[in-house]
Length: 160
Image (tube, rainbow, N blue to C red; front, top):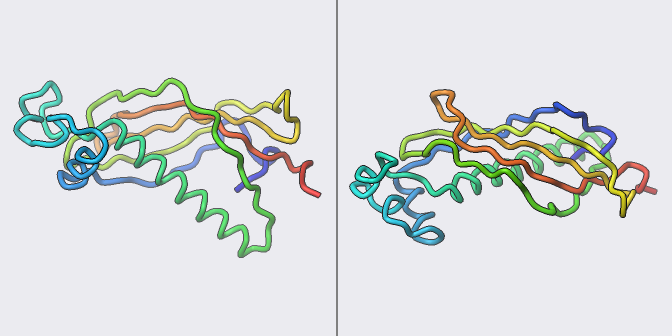
């Protein structure tokens, strides 16, 4: 993971993709969002989605999983090169969550993240605050998911 000083506005990460199947849509829905159009193909077809639809929370969770996997991979690579790895702080939240188009069984969503803003924390100057837009695009190139996430990023100056 990068330190605050190593990050630039506009920096983009391709996070990977996730295939939404009828099986994983239903499994997520049973546990976390048991609405009829997430649980049953016929109910999905009759809904305004027109098919078995993934929960928006499932789409967001897939994005988060790929984000964490990418961060862990990059940290392992940095350690293998003998570099110091910045340990990011918690996220104070997100804004502008949008489920733009339905994600249906059979869709594969590719996720990417792009840094939109960077600033030093006024109350904790050893930390920077990053805002990044996470987006998901289906196999037809259609934007289906977007959110603006915030994270605390350590500044290099806090490292002894």
